[in-house]
Image (cartoon, rainbow, N blue to C red; front, side, top):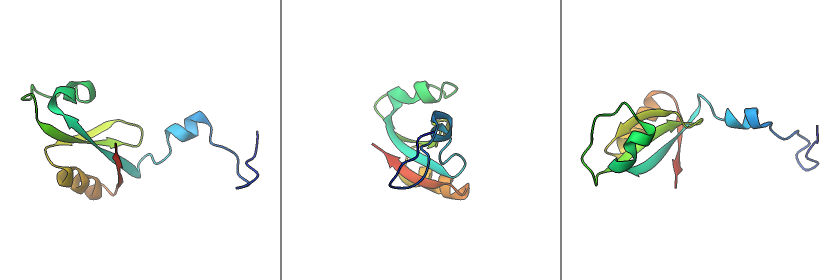
Length: 87
């Protein structure tokens, strides 16, 4: 294993990196209603052209879909998750 000389720590393995923030961090992703089925295949048909917000776990698993960013962030706080925005 190679050690980073600046931080004196070993780099993360791909598996460790995939789980970084798991259970502690979630991200908010703005999306159009046309994109919903890709992340939320169980969602009912939604009117095209709507701006929606998805709350996703650190691993990318969908948590909640809402029509406001504030509601997505509130859901994260309710579950003790730190939010970050995805652009």
